[in-house]
Amino acid sequence: MTQAILRHTILAAALTGSVVAAQAATPAPSDDWQYALDIYGWFPTIGGSLKYPLPSGIVAEVDAGPDDYLQDLQFAFMGSFLARKGDWSILADLIYLDLSGQTGKATVPRLPDGSGLDLNADNSIKGTLFQVAGAYTVARSENANLDVLLGLRYAGFDTDTDLSIEGPLPAPLLTAHLSDSVNLVDGIIGVKGQVAWGGNWFSPYYLDIGTGDTEFTWQALAGVGYRWDWGDLILAYRYLSYDMGSDKLLQDTDFSGPALGVTFRF
Image 1: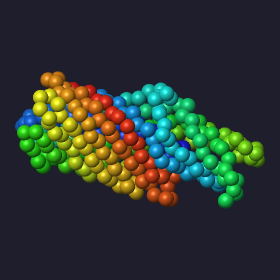
Image 2: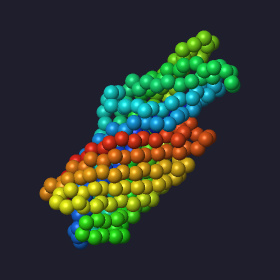
Image 3: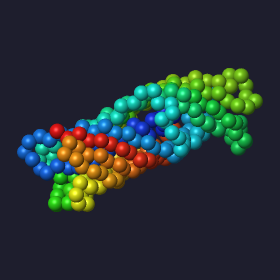
Image 4: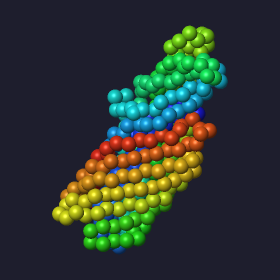
């Protein structure tokens, strides 16, 4: 769990980009299937903390961010798909990231109340996030709509971490290699929709809450979009939060930053 959670902290920032596509301008209800494909990027910073055990049993306290994953990005894909018929819709989102060379810092106490030692962490991370939800339009006017959604959010990570400690420690504690994986599944419920401002301008919004493998998770998005005949361009700000509880390695971690997406309708 050690690496997986550390990897999750860095990755989830990029991996939870499932909201932008869901905010594509909602078309008028139709008895025919309507589709939208979204390609997007999310560029968050990370705030929070980790704590994980070393092989010796010592617990390392790790600050998680703010951080930028782009400089270490090897490969990434972020895309979402929306299918709608009448007031019903299905949302699906897939994100894959391959990161290497992620560096971080941790503190390892010498004694329970003693001073700490610096610990360096070099991480290689691969992660996948998939979200699927069904939604129903419960309110609609000429300028706005409100959908209620219910679904699942999955996050799976594989990581390798090399630890090195700066300080007068016994040789066995000077370096360590850790490798692990984690899979997280949460049920989510939320709302989404848009408000039209006139012309081709509109504002999307999104909010969900969930629980399952995490103690509590929630995310929110608001932004502005512009519509053409072929699709939409959306600029938004997103916030994602995970609360894993005091007994988990990932603690009260949040991800926040701008997101930019292009939606193609057909």
